Picture 1 (spheres, helix red, strand yellow):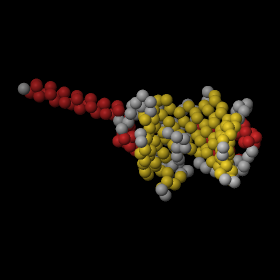
Picture 2 (cartoon, rainbow, N blue to C red):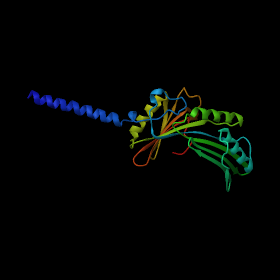
Picture 3 (cartoon, one colour):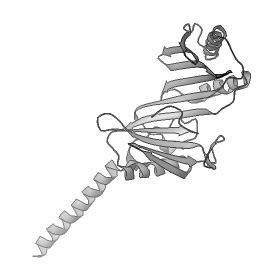
Length: 251
């Protein structure tokens, strides 16, 4: 009889250990996250690897002067050379009913540089906007490229925040509760405090604030400089976006 109860006890302990191990294997905390490109904002213990990860830097802002199309194209060519591209491609311009969009796209093994100049007419007024976006693999350090963007801001009198975005893929679909748990873990990793969250369809977005990040925006009078979003990906995966201070592109 004693031997029977001993066998049952061992089985129960083994089953409990197995359940705990399975939970740890699939809990959001243990899923891999690549934060190495968040420009020094991440602690070393968080530098694991996202699968299929990449990173982006983006500056989108009004341009202080009106430029005709020929000058727009010249500006984009000059900006491409600021990124040490000696022979950039010739910019193209698409005309719309309310303005034009001039674009320059340069692709290489180091990533993609996308430059756009938008000239939009509203009534008698013309509004000009500049968009600079760098899409880089995680093997590239963002610090040097951020420095170039900071120099461009000063040199051309541009306003606006330089936004950092890291994107990666979880290998399965996370529930809403798991997304919230994963977001809280990432905020903790970033030394940030949650501020608010928004759910829209299959997308969950979480906003936070960290004292260690200089720039921020205001959302409902709250300071925000870390944005974490989860969206359904292909083949039952979950895409995670981590942006600072906000995520500018669609997700």
